[in-house]
Length: 119
Length: 114
Image 1 (cartoon, chains in turn green, blue):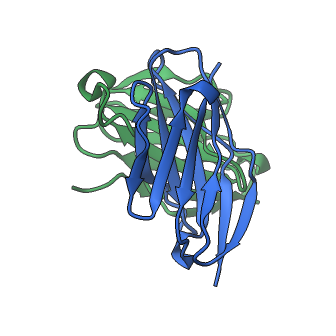
Image 2: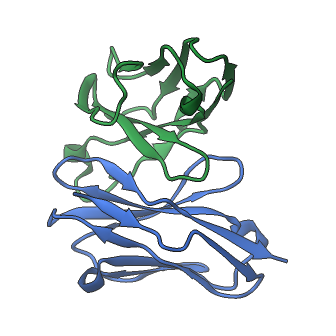
């Protein structure tokens, strides 16, 4: 079974530029998460999708970050314009829908992440 | 509010020693799930174990074991006979049944010295 795919692996941009990250979740996983992990910290949830609908985006800085999952499969996360403090690893994860998962298989599986450096 | 606390920022032990990573959680949900993830230097988060709130049985998988105690809201992780390959950052995480969010602790960086 293929895992969560993310691209690119690395990205270096100047502040005020824009950048986009792509994620392809595990086949059949309805829930998709985007996390931001700043060096030395735990992952912080930015946005969570259930199919193509947003479940939670309370910690997404909406003035500069946006995300979509138009067909309920792949997702893109965009930053425009980037700031120095956006330098981090952006992790995508997916899991089965809660109803299907029940008490089982509710864990999230992560991609390798995109390391963003803003200079 | 959901919260996960990993009080140990960094631990160093000599190879073959046993080591326990602590995790304390807070939640108002009556049904919830706890997880441990490993993040090696490559950066990918690797799922290790899931526990639901109804199952307080401890679990052992090879050199890994987990101790879940609802009375103290703790879900500790023990590595027996540690190996250099165990060096990584370990994260404890919590998922409540109401909102399906997975909240992570700040992680414990484990160094296994040869």
